[in-house]
Image 1: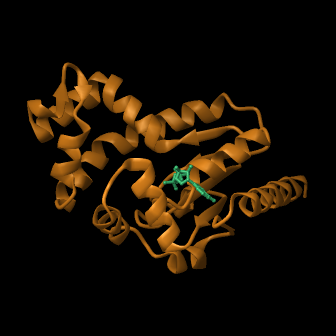
Image 2 (image 1 turned 135 degrees about the vertical axis):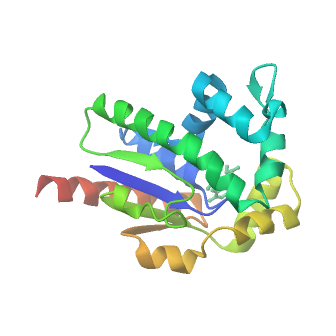
Length: 195
Ligand code: ADP
């Protein structure tokens, strides 16, 4: 069984994922794997250079700031980049999944509903937190301005819209409370699997 874990920037996805990992659940972080593949796959490298030019890589390493600046205001280019990277991540995930031997796995994906990918999951957990808290967290974590965080948030669905389509919600305004909710959901999922 595949459970998707999503949530807006700064909601605490990575933090919550660590809790599930500590409960023994195998976890897959789609963004991290995408980054690895963009750095290591020769096919992706070739296609991205075709799309973005030679500057896409510096000494064989992905030039992330350059790509980010290119795609931020260009949805067409973003779709083209996704069309190169997403199928590769999908194949890598399938391979990873085949090697897992657990009741269920969790795949962390920042954007599920925005890309209409909810059907790829048996259940979806959405992590939410107050917008002010999320903004403060990201400003501190990434050392970026408030405006930058708000601009990223503008491209993501609101918590309300995500909650409406989710099976489980974790409110992460407080770590201890969030961990309790994660454990409850874990136990519920195990119960569902035993039915
Ligand atoms: P996401 O993966 O959703 O972007 P993170 O898990 O990276 O979010 O959390 C963003 C930042 O906020 C991290 O630096 C994390 O340590 C911190 N953080 C997460 N949850 C809480 C919380 N409940 N209280 C305080 N800080 C938190």
